[in-house]
Amino acid sequence: MDDDGIETDALAADQGPGPGAPIPASAAWREGDHPGRRLFFPLGDLDLEADPLGTLPDTVLAYETWGTLNKAKDNAVYIAHALTGDSHVFGPAEPGHHTGGWWNAMVGPGKPIDPAKHFIVCANVVGGCQGSTGPASPHPEDGRPWGSRFPYVTMRDMARAEIALMDFLEIDRWRLMTGPSMGGMRALEWVSMVPERVGAISPVGSTGATTADQIAWSTAQVAAIQADPRYRDGDYYDAADGDGPHVGMGIARMIAHTTYRSAGELNERFDRSYQGDSDPLGKGGLFAVQSYLEHHARKLARRFDANTYIRLAQAIQSHDVGRGRGGVETALARYTGPALVIAIDSDRLYPMQNSQRLDAALSGSDGIKVVHSPVGHDGFLVEAAQMIAFMDEFERSL
Image: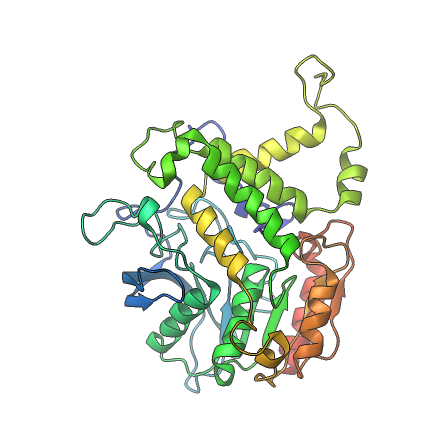
């Protein structure tokens, strides 16, 4: 339901293992794999908001840090990742990390979020597939992957786990909390739950509550995975390479990717052109846009996990900061700190009215900042110069 790297220097974040490798049943990070830069926080039992299980036992969060926490502990920045992102927000592809940092354009030396000035933290969410406890993790009772047994998790469950990590790191208050799409949703949960612990917030291309339209798009994605006979009701981790639910997850990705791009951009970029010398008119070829979507489907299958896709899509569907709090506006009124709300003018997944509602509800927001882009939702990645300018000005004002 949101992307983590397409066309810019974030391109590396969406590549995954080489195209010649067989597609694994799951590309989840598993115990025994190279840890890369990951650190691991043993949270213990995590209370769950909605699942009948009640608690997720022996929960672990995988996280990464850059920079140094200063003596005053006032330079900490939390970056919350999007649907198919993870803790590797900055850096190259390297052992343990198939892909480069998903927000290299925003994080790094000389960038608005700079490890020379900031202590930067990013964790893989609960339910994720890159080191945090998720469906591919061993169940504490039998050591087999959780698979179909993994519980339903909400944005609030994820935020509570992140708050526990903050306590573990002995940080009282984030200087800034930011993230795109699903990351922005969690940032909004934070300021609804513990507003005193967030110094400033910047949700990017996000929303205070998922709409029926957004839920509809993600429902089709979940259904595509569940309809794949190789999904095996979520218990596919013992399957051989090539025998996992990569077809269903690929279809889910194609549906999602269509929402990440604008109709105008797709039409302008591909029109009705054929892919190479092929002929799609009854001769088995592909339109260029079809080849493009299939390419992104294959790439995701080489670096992600189908059960995680479902659980995180469901968590996004659960998102409503106003649930049980008197509505979105009442929930966000608890937070009075600085807010930078960024929207993309051509975004059809999280359209500008979502950000306008946030701007009206957050007293510390001084109007939305609009990224002008023909691309759509992915504009927050593609239009790096505009994004950097907005974030740099905001960060310097804190």
